[in-house]
Length: 113
Length: 116
Image 1 (cartoon, rainbow over the protein chains, first blue to last red):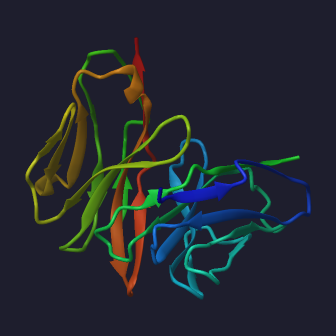
Image 2: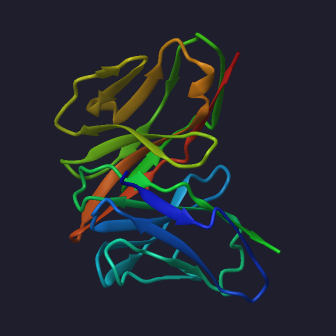
Image 3: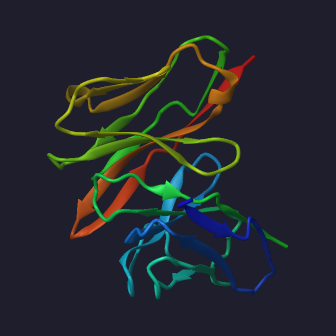
């Protein structure tokens, strides 16, 4: 069954700590995306990648980093520079064409300890 | 600039009522694509429908229908005879393809509560 797997479902971060959120897809999609969702603010784009070994900053990239070493994987690191990381993080993928819908994972909820 | 506005933050209806969720978009592109997604309490977004800018036909899928009007830059979503299972957050989105990259602009979402 094809889909997107995000892990962990819940994550807690201590002050000054970097944490990494995993996103894996087996849909053979070229494009992958990371969004942050805060209450009442919809989805805000953090980073996106159209192809392996290439990625672009979205609207709120500060305090985050990504890598795209494999087509199926697009991990997001929330660094200690992100001062307000508490949010729901969603990963998505799509065929690399603007008429294609995105497929989403189940999300990771990150909280501060 | 590309923008999607969902002015209704939250709507509550009683089961079996009809409800319309509004979506207004802004774009300078002549070719564009609009999407609706449903986010149930479990969290993942589920794709519902796609519409391209050349096709203004309304679409019906079971209890769901969509009204696309270029003249008013709107792509509204109607649920007929709502059910408790329709309770979710609904997002409207616009695809943006500039500079050879593809991304999506989402509205802030409308939370629909269907009461039994």
